[in-house]
Amino acid sequence: MTAQVPHILVVGGGYVGMYTAYGLRRAARKGKIRVTVVDPRSVMTYQPFLPEAAAGSVEPRHVVVPLRKTLKGCRVVTGRVTGIDHAHKVAKVMPEEGPEYELAYDQVVVALGSIARTLPIPGLAEEATGFKNVEEAIALRNKVLDRLDVASSQPDPALRKSALTFVFVGGGYAGVEAFAELEDMARYATRYYDNIEPADMRWILVEATNRILPEVGPDLGKYTVDQLRKRNMDIKLETRLESCEKGRVVLSDGEEFDADTIVWTAGVKANPALAATDFPLDEKGRVKCLANLRIEGVTDAWSAGDNAAVPDLTSDSGAYCAPNAQHAVRQAGRIAANILRTVDGKPPQDYEHKYVGSVASLGLHKGVAQLFGIKIKGWPAWFVHRSYHVSRVPTFNRKARVILDWTLALFFRREVTSLGTLQAPREEFRRATQS
Ligand SMILES: Cc1cc2nc3c(=O)[nH]c(=O)nc-3n(C[C@H](O)[C@H](O)[C@H](O)COP(=O)(O)OP(=O)(O)OC[C@H]3O[C@@H](n4cnc5c(N)ncnc54)[C@H](O)[C@@H]3O)c2cc1C
Image (cartoon, rainbow, N blue to C red):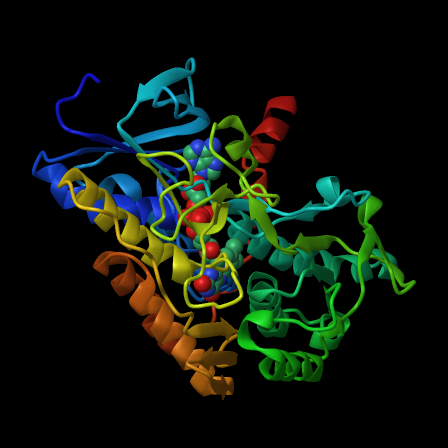
């Protein structure tokens, strides 16, 4: 090794990566360890706020946390890890520009998260969008508002109908929150169109199982279905998307229609980049971990979050921790503490956390929550959702900005400006060069 102090390489700067480095930053500033975080993005995304960012309740820049600013004392590399050879303790890094290079380390934290779990559905890759990143949230908001502009200015009834049809596939919290928040925003926006009524829009949620929002339990899942149906939203349970070629949606219940907007939120799978490592993976492609978050069978390697199979010590049935932020944040704290313990020659400690429940927003002043077994609905749940997440979003700066966004929204009308042209910023200039 070149360095005198242990070099900790954190692969991924999302929940697990950012919070692990955050827990190590003081030791790094004191020169006890060296920490490098590698991520293709220079920001950590607070994903639970993406539906509100899409709906315009929170400024998109406020739901991301800049890594360099937050992780003072750590080195941040903007690049993609393309392989890890733990036997030799080196990782390959592909920077945004320039050739790939190798980075040596003493201990590694594998925090690559997950990607959308897709199926080989005809048309899906070409027509659908995911909902995991801030750019997807911004694009979706712009697209929904842009489709209202298109429908309002379009005399052809078929094209107008297609523009006003919004399909979401997958009924977990990411899908349901995005679906409900965007409908709420679009419903509000229709007041500015003299020829679009809320009833002209069709919002369809397609879910393969017989329930939505499993995170809040069956009762609140059913309550959510009822509430969304009361808003005239079409919830199709036990239904699958069969194809969506050229925007022609075909569902397993036999229905067929055209839709300009198709959003895929049907679950996640461990980041496939793990295949380019020499770590043990389970049948779901996750890194196999011990309860102390060490990777099985090796030393000096740790993992947690969506890309890891971590035994849930609070369950008797041998289950693994669910892929969610609640575990990711706490596991990251445990990894940071364990790394510092091992540097001091102490044994690592096990991770144990009993899941406290989930909160979900269903639009402005609407929500469901299940905390410590207590079921909460409507406005109180929405308030719990906001309070919980603002307490969780990292850094005082981001908390303050999000609260300011909400406070401003109390005094001004909802912001529903369509910036559809953001998706093609060079278009006007390109036309100018051709005239
Ligand atoms: C819309 C949405 C809403 C959600 N709401 C909730 C909620 O309300 N409550 C809750 O508990 N959970 C929620 N979640 C889930 C939660 O966000 C995840 O469980 C959590 O982000 C997992 O953390 P992670 O660190 O494992 O992965 P991530 O936070 O996704 O971080 C992975 C990081 O790895 C980076 N990366 C990827 N490939 C590479 C590579 N090759 N090299 C280097 N870096 C790489 C990525 O850029 C990313 O920064 C939500 C998720 C979404 C998408």
